[in-house]
Length: 342
Image 1 (tube, rainbow, N blue to C red):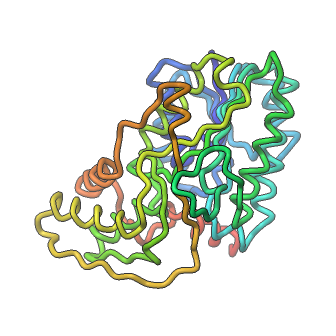
Image 2: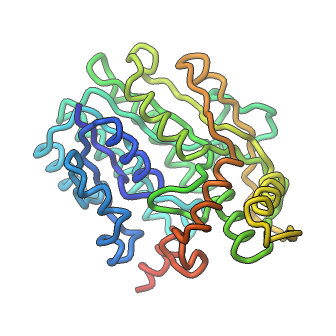
């Protein structure tokens, strides 16, 4: 089985690719590399994948229909794990065209490639952020989608698009992961748990924007395990299905308090961390229910937010995340703004 992984060089894509390679799979990985410095192409984060004998990397933008068509025509793979997306909720409000190209047009090109390339199976990574704001105590997969930004909107719009292509020969499954946290081979430090941990360790103070918003979380290792499960699951159990997947629904303030406790334990020299709150216009708040994926597929995340924080503490202690506030490589939106400004 050969697997195409789109977005293979990203925070999640690199981790998923490494996990699949460890399992013995053959991979073709594609990524436009827009969020990388030139030097990043040469360092170990991508080289670690590219040097693997079962991994072929192609630099490609999925919004380019011709390039995608040629990829499917010239490469032999059976299954697609679609992780490619323009990330960053706030940036979608500033540069909407980037989200149209990557998150909607690009996915349409992938689906057309699947149709012509006789692909048998596609796993689509949507997002739990499609729910926007909800007061429901448990947001299930049947909850209405209330997108607040183009990122949320296009993630949701791609779901029915996939279902138009599925048939007896082509299985499609959708999962809506919670916000991914923890340490990965291509690190992001612009998601809630990772942001607060970075602040605690390197600023000696935790700044919380808002605090009452509820956010579901998912450890990056559980995300990798979930992708592997969706690749193996029987078609009759997953065809056209949608699955939430998160481990802990916590308020931003609860995350901050957990970060404070764990960092003070991991770094005895850092004590009595101050938590400072500041207003925010990011009102996304929802509490997802992930019972369906446990009921149908027996999947239950095994890692916690605390595990993610401890993993990050280890990475910082071992100097794996240098210049964690100054280097744009950790911050997708900041990097994209700099690219566009240049």
